[in-house]
Length: 382
Length: 192
Image (tube, rainbow over all chains, first blue to last red; front, side, top):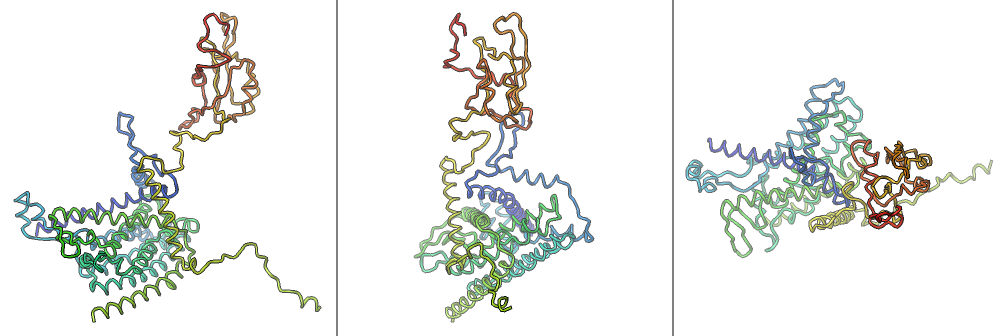
């Protein structure tokens, strides 16, 4: 019992620090990647000077994130003369919390056996006995459904923010956010249905484990090879859900100032921004889990790397755990970087194009994809 | 009356060409992929340059770096020529300050009756680079060849606009090794 508590406290600490870390690092990645894509150097003026020396730590501009955070914390928390102060104060948290909660069901590693891992320390090893823990805060049968349930909650936050700001720009932004996010939520759900048909489960851990298989003898059995259309549609819908360029109509600054968070300042506005950056990581983690084989290297299972022809490269438990944690983070960072590439390449849609894109292009495609998958799955399984 | 009825319907003048998209372009997805390929390619190219120790950006890292492509005739900084003993050649006649169209030169004169050849010299000679237009008229006006312009650019960027005034210590840093007009070091006993 106590062992469970210890393990899950560690998991939660890991998850929160990973998310916060991604939220901070991605602000830097976004700046630097945009700069490198545009033949520029990027933000590199913020520094910390080591006291009593002339040595300035610039570190490629990593401290700009710290400067941003400090600025947001120290700014005046200006409040509009709104009639709904409770909703106004609540909205950033309603946006921020579900984003964090989604990560609870995403597996960031395989099965952890602390008894085996700590075999160098007999007392600790004995204390844990032969308990094993899936590296995931909450292993729920309804994993994917939980993701969508929490994902839908951030719509409420955006609507609350726009409604309670008593500002027309905020209101317009909130209305846009609502209709856009609901539309793309639908597309996202439909694209994932094909995967559920193939894997026969919504439990994310099982989905990842099934992706360690091999396709056609040489391809890793990743979702992106089974459902390439679904992968592209899912990523597009997820970016739209996150309200980033090219789908950032709810906060289009040339039209709506800042959309639904126009009236927010200081750390409340910072929470919106932070939620956006964490959601990039969440979307990347979801995409990794569903389409890129999750925490495993190609052909890798908890036992080791299994090549075609039953050639097994066994790995020690510690090596497996470390590999899985690192591989997951690397994949998430790569997908996040790809999202940033999209954000700095494409121009913003017009609003009617955004909704048209969802209902007239992506939804039919997702439906076709689902039908084809259903027929194929049915003909395969009999 | 028949004239009015037979008039052609008004046609709006077309000022631009309507965009003509091919089917391939209208599908959009492939063009997106092509665009991502371009931007991603630039990203990878520049990253490769950074990682191999070269510069992957067009930016001049000002003020740490100065541009290499200044024009050959560019003259960005004034200097005061010196007498052999290191004092300025300037006789504080105020001709340059008078001719200066931007009125950026300020001179205070000092008087030294001991030095019969050059009794008058500047005790303060300052140029405000925030207003200087680099026209070079001061150089032309000078009767003593005491002020010239050189190719360097002064280090102006700072947090305080007072630093844009170059004082005499900065203007007297020019120590030429080969100068036809003023041999350096001066010949002993020369007129200089």
